[in-house]
Length: 161
Image (cartoon, rainbow, N blue to C red):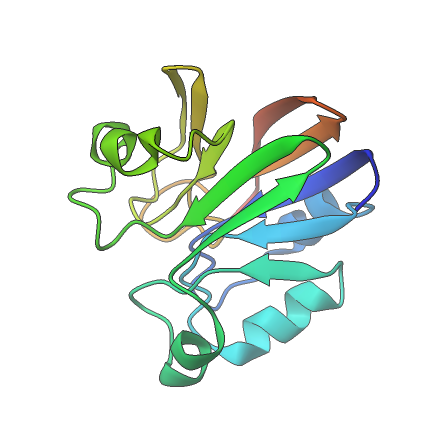
């Protein structure tokens, strides 16, 4: 991965690839998906936009659960990123992740499951939930991550349902 990259951050698509999501992800170098794609067709559709690195969620079909890990630790530029869906971690809130990730001290923890957008820094680690890209039970959202060497910025993007 290049030292500078633009990365789509997605979770909880639940079988729905909204046209606005395609537009928001146009031109990204890759997509990091935090689970609940639900079916492999969704992964295939996202891979037509950009390469996808994903973890499985609690609603994913058996084929995805067998194919994708429950969590990942990746590096982009000089940024260490932890990815997890969160369904096995308490209520999948920032407080539930702090102890788990304190030892490895990633710069960024990406998670999903709650369908709620979160962007919070705790002990120098940024915790980010992109919300539900499928718009299930909440307004649809995703995230855009810009990595430049050892620095990054991340923001939520509102989508039309």
